[in-house]
Length: 172
Image 1 (spheres, helix red, strand yellow):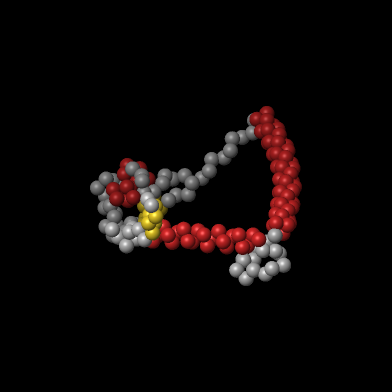
Image 2: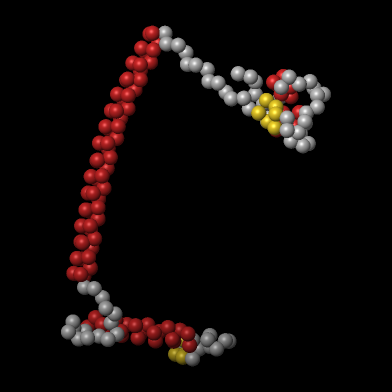
């Protein structure tokens, strides 16, 4: 048997180990402490008693917190109402603008307005560097070799020189 499991108190068939005895003693001391704190009068100071709020003080704090929470809820409700009004006004403005846009579109269609002018794309250029080939330039710029040759009026086996400028898009 280990020292903690050997009984030190034995009475009839009832045996207590040191650990069990310690637990029982601590429980009895705790009960005595509770009884002494419950039976003392309010005018008796208790050095061992922790400072605690009275139930009235706790109730007052809870009520104050509840009032503050209600005020915050009301403020949030007011803000939500204001935002809903702004949203409704913005929806009205969008509806008006859509109506104007629809009328303009129908007027343009009725007059036979000219189609929008084609946008002019600027010509892209590339300056040849050492080690470049026509194939590598075409692959690097994601264009076909045939287009690169056609846009620059080159032949398949024609040599290119470092510093030479090549078109990477068709003429406008």
